[in-house]
Length: 394
Image (cartoon, rainbow, N blue to C red; front, side):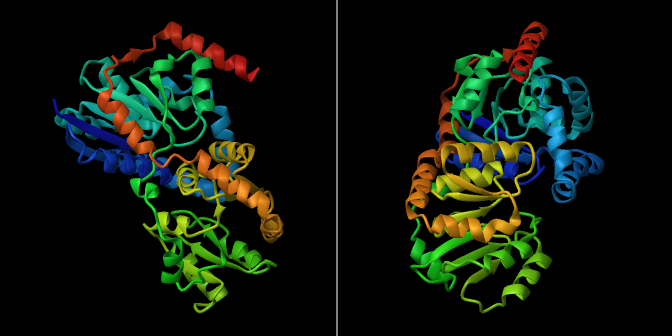
């Protein structure tokens, strides 16, 4: 029987949506797949709820990242906010539920925890019969990703799988796939041709600095520091959807500066990453997965407390990144790395080894072959998971 596939994301940041889009691309055209839909679940809620999730998140990233870190830590206990959060989400998601009833998906994949709880509730109440999978979009697992009912988890690392096993989840329910990235990240690119298309030198060390999809970063300060590098470096600056930021950076470096190319939002990140020698920016889950898929080592800037700090920890532990704890040291840190070619080569090798450019295909293949029944975690089992997590924190 041909499958109907529904992929649900939430635009709290861009990573959840990008992972969902990668999965949708990979599912389309597969034998046995009748229809594929990707929805941003927040588009099916009211404006106040949508803005709470998306706009508030971006404001906190810019103005008060420490608040996000506090909230991440305070809520990282299994089922702590579960009941209240699910009631609120279900109340706001009536439009989404109506769509799901009409679409009748055979497979549902969630790249954000918000729609996961809604689908689990519909399965429990026998409103729909579907296969629910949860795809983590960071390297670590936060407690809010835990679902009372599910079929399978897809995680980024063996370590994350070990954590879920320690909590008591069955091994056959956990697949280490990596974080899904667009299939284009698995394609070969002529890095020198990309450089030439941007008017850059073919044989010069190339740095890719990203201010993020929404351009919320101290990009002018960073670019000022990059102008102080001792080594001959050319830099591609991505300002995202922030046109004002792009104009300010262009005013700072000039439009004909051979050392800088300033771009806005781009859908050619795979080309730019493969044309570059070092990525400079935040270690968001999807950005990290994309860089690793390209074998591109990272220089980490200002990770958001919580999930990005944990991503940073993994990259540093694995030797695929350096970290600039102070923005004032950016030039010093990059120059020191360029002074040590052996270390840079090692970072490239580790990035290639950690990269999973075929993660989306792994998810698709696994789900089209999967016949697991739903797993319901009852109150007793939820208590055991909470106790196991408390033991890890003590």
